[in-house]
Length: 105
Image (tube, rainbow, N blue to C red; front, side, top):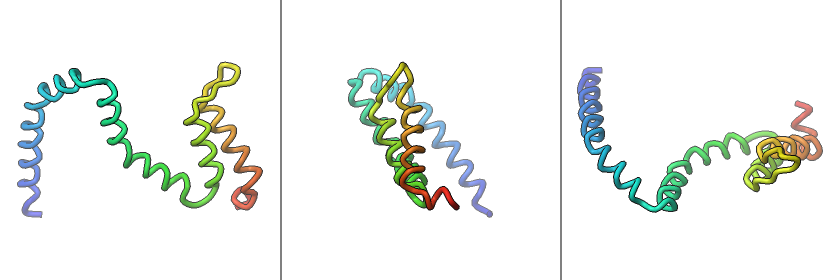
């Protein structure tokens, strides 16, 4: 408890240092190829994707969650309706057909 002020000052100083270098990094990112920036964004999202997989495939309705993810990632569109909708429809249908025990709970 006695070091909470030290942590707050350290955090503030680091925010000022990172903020002062922000224009340099913005210039680097705007000069970088689009594929490189997309790769960095994808790498940054890996932990969030891992958390979503653990939550989605952890307990019940795992097959439905997997089918919903695959259909949504495939980017299919029928009748001008996007993949997110069809992913939900396919995930619920597969889960209802194959995972009756999970629906009974």
